[in-house]
Length: 390
Image (cartoon, rainbow, N blue to C red):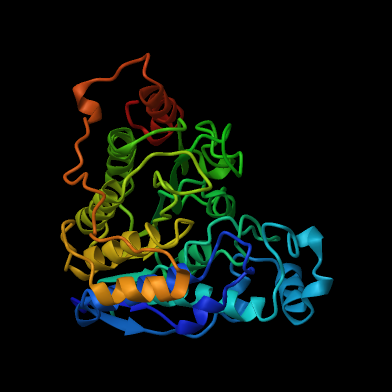
C-alpha cells in the first residue's frame, strides 16, 4: 500500500453551479483547492483525477429512470421533471448538470477504489459528500449521491463491512436510505435535530430495516450545540460502534455547515472542533479499518470564512501533514479571495479555540442536560441491537 494520500480533484467540479442566488456557491471548491496549494499540501498528496461515473456505476444506487431524467434536464434545463426533484428551488436544473454530477461521483468512487486496492492509504474528495440524493430523486442540493456510490463500489469490490460517519449539520438521509436494509453498512449521522432543520429525518429511533436492525445510527443534536457538546456526542457514540463493527473501510463526510457562522443551520461549532473530529476519524481508520479511509466534503455555506479552511485541514490530516491551527494564511490566497468575492479572507487556520476541551461519556451524564439526553436516546435505541450496553 502506498503511504501517500490522494486528493481527488478536477477543476471541472466547479461547474456544479445552481446559479448566482443559490447558497451552494462553487467558489468554495476553488478557494479550498487554492488554499491547499498555498499551504504547500500539494507536495504531501498525489493530486488525482478520475473518470465520471458511468451509467452502470450510477445504477449501483440510482434508478435508471432517474438517471435518464437528470440527463434530459441537463440538455434542456427548462423542461426538468420536478417529480424527480429537478428544477426546484433547492435543485435548479442547469446545462451540463448530469456531466458534472457524474464527475463528482466518479471522484468519490475513484477514491474508494484507490483505497481498497492499496494505491493510496487515504483519499479525499472535498467536492463530494452530496448525501441527500435519493435512489430516485434529487434533494437538498444533491443530484447524485457520491457517498452512497463509493460505498456501493466498495461492496462490489469485496468489502464485507463499510462504516459511514457523517458529521454534516444535516442528516445523511440519502446514504441511510440506500443501505437501510444492508447489514454490511453501518451509517452513523450526527446532525442538528430534525425538529429544527432539513430534512426533518434522523431521529434516534431510525435504526435500520428488518434485515439490518442497528445498522443506522442517528444522534439528533439540540440547536445551539457548541464545541464541547459536539465532541462529547461524537466520542460518546462513534468510537464504540466502530470498534464493535470493525469495518474494512471507513468513509466519512465532513460537511462544514456545523460552524457557528454557517447561514443555513443552528449549531455553534468552531473550525477547531471540526479539525478535532477529522483527527479522530483518521485515528479510528487506523485503529479499526487498517488505515483505509475515504474522506468527503459536504455542506458548508460560509464559503470564504469556513469551508476552505475546514477542508484544507481535512486534506492535511489525511496527508499526514496536519496544518497547525495557529498557521498564518498566505497573503496571496487572501488577495485571491478578495478578487473573487470582494470579501476579506481569514488570517489564520483557527477560530482561536484550539485545543478544544470536552468531557467523555465515561465521566457520567446529566439526565437534565439536552445534549446528554440526545446521546442517551441514541445509545438506548441502537446499542442493545448491536449487543452493546447503552
